[in-house]
Image (tube, rainbow, N blue to C red; front, top):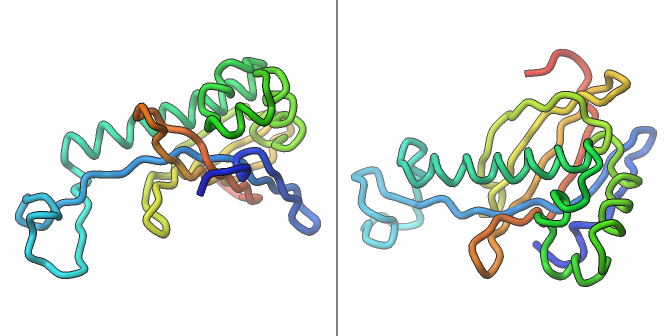
Length: 171
């Protein structure tokens, strides 16, 4: 993950979709007896301690990053969007305003979000992914998935995002 995936979008046949960046976070793997995964004698088994204080803090940090990113897009705040872009994308766009303008055009459901509900944070292919449901200003519902990654100083950056229609009741 990483690279220019953060800023590239795609349109799904007949429906608006998008691809943007998602931030990454590694949860503390532990064995079932509470020792770290590196100390456990289990082979090919990693248990994520969902109740550990570290895991809870990391999930909250990821939720804050995604919430702030979507808030920035939907409230005309380029600095909030820029903060969660990886350095490569910041270098490509050069300015907060250029990155923001791209995302507003490419990710309308996020740019016009009126309500956001978290569905959870999990791992996909070893990478953290936060899932949210969005209702836009037209009342259309979307499920957005954000892949996340830590940068060199430990801050979460959005390295990929995909949005799919989510008709029906929000979770």
